[in-house]
Image (cartoon, rainbow, N blue to C red; front, side, top):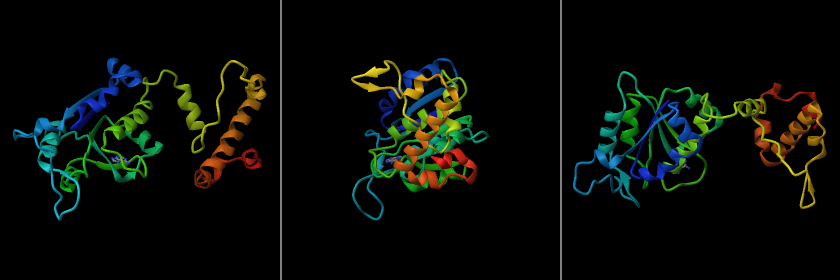
Length: 241
Ligand code: ADE
């Protein structure tokens, strides 16, 4: 997968060198390029923002550098999918991560200040698929951290990126529910014991216990997730919990 990120703070994306994403890049599974939006400005101050049309507080990103950046990075014959992180976007969920993991080319436009001139998004949408995407109902300084989050969620779904593909299997098996608590050694720590069933070696009982913990956690913490599950998602044993 090719990924282009356009930002006025390229250093913010430095973590993309690290850990599993860094390793995927070294191994050629991911081709990530981070670009400074100011490289597409032409004035001495390398200006990217201006006051909002119609008045109001804050600054808006001017369209011209964005237009040139997209012209340089998007092949019209093979356009990327453009993602624009914004608190006004559609919610980012695991289902979108799965969808994005199948794309050959993603491009991210990181807005700062009070956002990007809407014509940038409207113009891009005439040439490529565009999604304005929100991480949640809170406001960040800009899109950079959102890009890190989205890329982490997406790239771990690409075959070969994650060391242990079994964990992806386990996740999809538990789709729509929160994960059960996990434990490791020692069996007793500061007087607290690992739940006895997990040490029993009884595979079916362990699976049942994990499933029950997932159901209980989800009911307590995210009842709306339980309510939204498809009718066949819970069997009779689940309903007994
Ligand atoms: N940019 C600013 N706030 C954001 C949010 N909540 N999600 C995605 N991008 C953002």
